[in-house]
Amino acid sequence: MITKEVKDAERAMVWFDYLNSDYFQKMFVYGEEGVHHYIDEEGYPRHTDEVLEILNDENRQGFTEDEPFGFRYIFYFRQDYYTTLERFQTMDENTLAGYDIVRKYFVDKSDIIRVPIAYNPEDAVTNTFANLRDYYSDEVLRIIMGEPDNVVSGYNDMITKMRDLGLDDINTYVTEQFSAYGDEYDKWYNAMMARR
Image 1 (tube, one colour):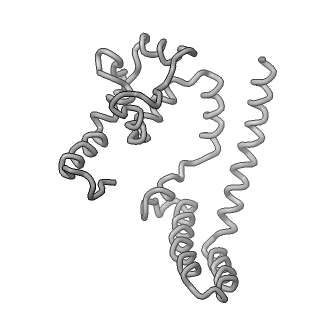
Image 2: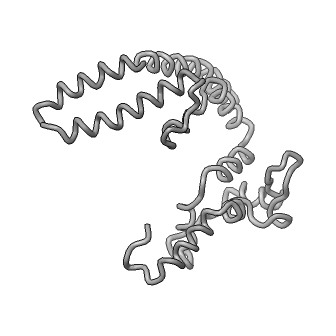
């Protein structure tokens, strides 16, 4: 947020635009192309062996409170794409196996949580999630701002309407996903512990 205390708001906006640019985001996570990373045959950036050696060094220290120029705070501006890409590229075999189990059972529904009206109407589960989210966010605010005596009845009416919109179907879907995931995760975890 740029407050009225900022002496040059336009310059601050230019700086924030730069921090959010694809160029900066990629540079911040991967460094300079040809020096700290290269582009693989699929078009993705990859750390060089030298950088991976540094990243995997157990004695490596992160940024400290007295880091000059507030550099450590730039981490707050990292976006998900390059950070997540790098995280998956640098995971060890066992961690990747765990993520493979998660990806097998869970469909990414983050779009319906983070982005308003960003859902695929062809996907029944996503559509139901989105309709519930939209209804709940409006209705719960109405209940909170209403008369105190009407909170309980308002809440009960809201739950009834959410059931009509498919709340029970979503609960069943999520329970099935977690159960299937849990069974396979237990096998993976037990195998991991047996190796120790």
